[in-house]
Image 1: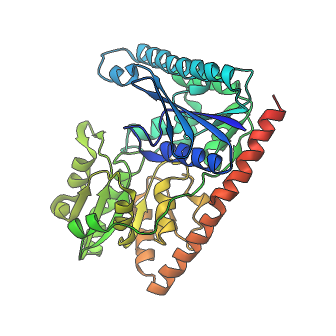
Image 2 (image 1 turned 45 degrees about the vertical axis):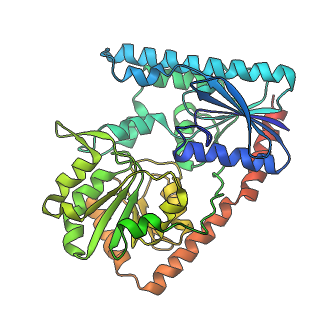
Image 3 (image 1 turned 90 degrees about the vertical axis):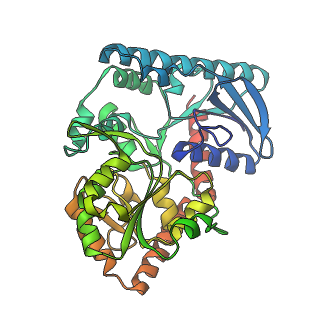
Length: 412
């Protein structure tokens, strides 16, 4: 097959980070390893074509990034949404124009849109296509807003602004939709009545040969709990923050390590960064919080993860996060949120622990249960976690994604 992958993130780009870029990179590699011709189309600040990794052709497609600039322009909410949609459509137009140009030279069997910025909006109807939902904008946008009030899942599904109406309109046009989690797939089925096929993302990461340089420099000799990911309400740092004094008092020999990108937040009318909010919550124990900057070298991340006592990921909403998968692959005991897609990976009390959303008391309870485990029990949890990930092997993923592609081509 000749397969086009359309995305806003790829490993070759300066903005490479997070689940979407990891997925698109793994997808391209798996398809190429099975003999398919792969072209990746990625939004960039320049036009360029080059060959990456054993014959994968990457097309950088130039598009001015007005969306980022909109953050700093004083606009009414309606105008901001309207301009954002206009920019997203423009991004879709330039990507699909380039795809059609290449299609005339060497026809594509299928286009795989990796969901971000409604890139599929201007897709050519004559080419079979597949859309992968990398998140649910209905849930994510509202989970980011405030940590003071509990996140209301049902209200998030009912609320619809202009941008989401456009998203719904464009989504209805897609014939084949997949998602890595039942949570995200279920949202689309509930809102739009569309069938979504769940295809879990492949786990392709080599965790051998980890690099302990950062661990030795910052954490050697320290016992610590670990959160890694973006410091925002979506990822649940307010849940850890509200429990952190109790955590430090119950476990006086432990630090709490936060590794990841900081973000600007608002808490009770006060503008703070994620780091500042956590320090505020910790009060007199603030010196027992250790912040590590985002790390581009994965093997150094694994060095930090492998020495953690527990990995704490209290996200409000997620989509089979790489942080959870990577920690499980390293045999760590992970605490995640029930109803946020973690339950697809974790069976509570069997290979990890699940807490209730936005609930610091639930987090404390599960941390206490985890800390009462013997070393033998922790090893057993880790073995079970690794066994679960075998279902996400590249070969299993390849079989499922090819079934999806063939179905899309036959239904065209």
